[in-house]
Length: 164
Image 1 (cartoon, rainbow, N blue to C red):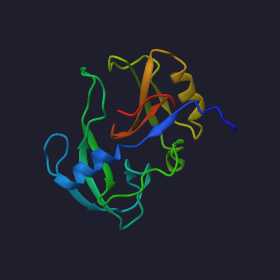
Image 2: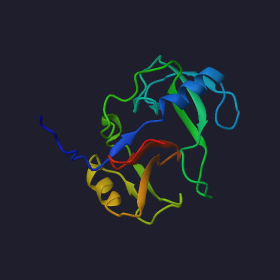
Image 3: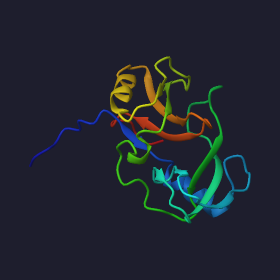
Image 4: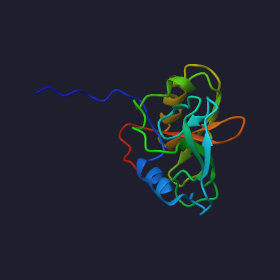
C-alpha cells in the first residue's frame, strides 16, 4: 500500500452545502431576511461553487455570516449562490476565475480577531501570499473578500483544519 503526504499549503472552502440547502429550503438568510432571486448577467461570484456565474443562471442573493468565534469581528454580508443545488467547487485550489481579481486576504486568529498578517492581494499568483500568511501559527483561517464591495468570497485554511 502506498500513501501520499498532503503537500498542499492551503484549502479553499466554499459556503457549506448544508447551510446553502437550508437557505434554499427556508428562503431566509442568517438574519431571517428573505432571499432575493436574480438571473445572472454573468460574472457574479458564486460562493457555492467558487466560480463566476454564466449569463442566464438562476441565482439567489442573501446575507451570509462566515463562522468565526464570537467576537466583534463577525460580519454579515451579501453573497450570490446558485438558486438550485449545484455540485459545489470542482477543486479545493484557489478558484481559477478569481486569480486576477483583487482581494483582501483577511487573516483571523483563534479568538476570531483580525490578525496583522492580513493583506491586499492584486496579482494572479495568490499561493505565495496565502502560504506566507498561514505560516504564522497564530492564523487559523483567512477570509477572501472582494475589495470594491467588501463581500465574503471564500475561506482559506490549512489542509488539516476540520470543517466547521
